[in-house]
Image 1 (cartoon, rainbow, N blue to C red):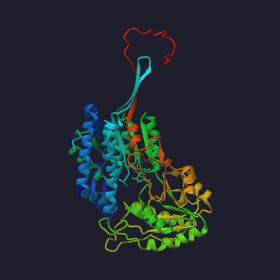
Image 2 (cartoon, helix red, strand yellow; image 1 turned 120 degrees about the horizontal axis):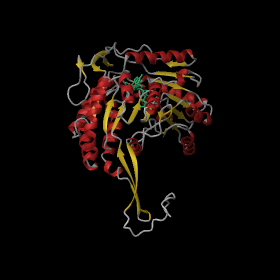
Image 3 (cartoon, helix red, strand yellow; image 1 turned 60 degrees about the horizontal axis):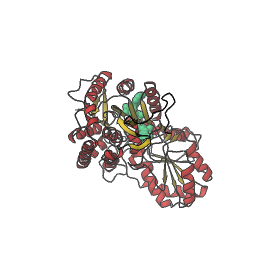
Image 4 (spheres, rainbow, N blue to C red; image 1 turned 180 degrees about the vertical axis):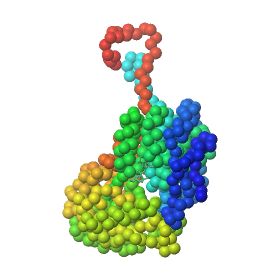
Length: 497
Ligand code: NAD
C-alpha cells in the first residue's frame, strides 16, 4: 500500500492514526495518509520559526524569482500533477489540469510581489513630516483546504502568503492529500528554503491544534460552512486573523430572452462538470416564467442524455466519479429527500453503475423539477451532479431567491437584456456574479470570496485582498528635525496644522 507522508524537514514520526485514500474510479483504497497531532504541529512550527525571518529579509525580487521558478516547474509537471490529482479526486485529467492552472494563475500574480508590496508614502504630510504605510509578513500562516480543489486552493493560499514573506503550514484534505505534498516538493525544488512550506496531514485533531497554536497568527480555511464557522469562531477566540470560506448553492437565472442553446451548453458543464463537486457549480437553475421553464426543460433533457460518465482517465468523459462511497450515498439520499419533499425527479442518477467499473463511486446526472424554497434539498448543498429547477414567476422573484438563500457564493444571470443584467448584478445579495458567465471565478488579480454562509470574515482570497490578509500594515510617521523648528505646545494632540 502506498504510504503518503507529511512534508516536514527530516523524517516524520510514525503515526498510529491513518486515513485511507480511495481511487474513486475503481472503488479501491490506493494509499494511506497519516493523521498528525499537536506534537507534530509543534515540530513544524518550530521549523517555520527558524526559517521565516531570513525569508522575510530576502528582498522581494529574490522571493519573486522563486515564484517564477515554481511556475515553470508546475508547467513542466502539469500532466503528472493532473494525473495524480485525478486518481485521488475522481475529476477527469483535463479538469484536473484546470484545477492546477487556476492555482498557477495566483502564483503568476505572486511573481509580481515586488510591485504589489511597494506600500504608500506621503512626503510633507506635516512640517518636515513624512508618512509611510508598509506591509510586513505575519510570520507563520496556516491553510486548511477542502478535497475538491487540492491544487488550486493550496496555491491560492501559500502562493500569496510565502511571496509576502511568511512561512506556511498547509493542512490539506485527507481525502486527496498527494498533490499538496507534490506542490511542496516542487516549491522546495524551485528554491524556497527548506521548511518554508510544510504539509501536515490530519483531521479535526490537527485542525484544533492549528487553531490553538500560539505561534500561528493567521488561518485561511476553505471547506463546508459548519466547519468554516467553527474555525472562524474558535480562531477569533484564540486571537487569530481568520478567513473561512464555506459551502454554496449557486443559482443560474434564465431570463425569457436568453439564448437557451447557449444556456443549456453552459449549464451542462457548470452543473455536472467535476460531478458537481465545485463550490462555484450551478446546481440550481431559475427559469423566469412558465414558458421559459418548459422550453429550458425540453432542451436540457437531450443534453443530459448526451453526458458521458467515465473513469477519471477517460479522455472523452464529461465527468468522473464522486470522491468517496459516503459522498455517493449522501448525494443519493438528497435525491430521495427531494422526491419526498415533492420534487419531480425528471432524470434519476441514483443506483448508477459504470460498466466494467461497478465498484466506482459514480452518480448519474439528475434533474429535479418543481423544487421550491421550502424544501431542505434546495436549502442545503448537495455537492453532486444534481440540477434542480426552481421556477420563478418574474424577475423580482429571480432576484429574491439567491438573495434570500443562506449561501451567497456565486450566481449567474443569462439574458440578452443589458438593463436586466445590470439591475440584477447591482441588487443580488451574493458575492460573485456572472453575466452570461456560468462559473464567475474572478481572475487572480481581482479576488475571490462569497457572502453570507459562504464566507466568514471580510477579506477575500488572492489579489490585493490576499496580500492584505497575509500581511499587517504598519504606518510610520517620521520627521528628522534640524533643531530650528518651534514645536509649540507638546501637550495638545498633534495636528498637521
Ligand atoms: P470539509 O469541510 O469536510 O473539509 C475541509 C477541511 O476541514 C479539510 O481539510 C478537513 O480535514 C477539515 N475538517 C473536516 N472535518 C473537520 C472538523 N470536524 N473540524 C475541523 N476540521 C475539519 O469540506 P470538503 O468536503 O473537503 O470540501 C467540500 C466543501 O468545501 C463544500 O461545502 C464546498 O462548497 C466547500 N468549498 C468552498 C469553497 C469556497 O471558496 N467557498 C471552495 C471549495 C470548496
